Amino acid sequence: MRDFGVCDSGIARLILTGPSILGSTDLIDTLEEVKGLGFYPSTSTFVIALVAKKCMSKQLWDEKVDAFKKWGWSDEDIVEAFRKSPHCMLVSVNKINLLMDFWVNQLGWDATAIVKQPKVFDSSLERRIIPRAAVVQYLLKKGLLRKKASLTAPFVVSDKLFLDKYINRYKEESSYLLKLYAETLNLAHTRDKTDMI
Image (cartoon, rainbow, N blue to C red; front, side):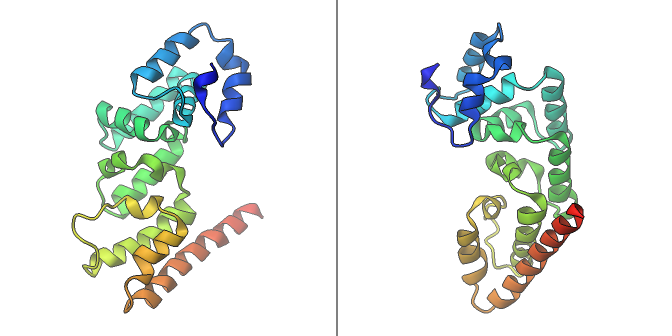
């Protein structure tokens, strides 16, 4: 058990102290299953994958798989995304559907693009995805982004890198892009405050 590595999010502590995992009779089977999926026991992603497999009922796991499939993901896509970012199976079914609905129905983008960068699911729809999508859509409409540019990359980079790469580099458009980004971001913060009232 000491090969779990360090996990900043405290999930390692949950693994080591959580009776639902350590008390489980099939822990060894799950450890082997997670290793079989390509996770290395010395990494924090191994721990997250183990938590996802052990702390979730089979029914809930299947509901999440069904949610991804509803948006066009295959079994292989789900396994690939889980390998890249096991957090994607820890988000709620509701978040999967909300994010995919926005991505597919409002942006008109292919849902399978997220398979390559499932960290998108770690982001807030209101505070990151929607504001950044407004910028990306504008850049695409104006032909300022390459046709083969990754649609997911803008959503997983740091705020500084996003501003540098998708706003400030376009000198003539940067003031409009910054205003567009700020407006959609402020709208998200306003919604957050109203939700707390």
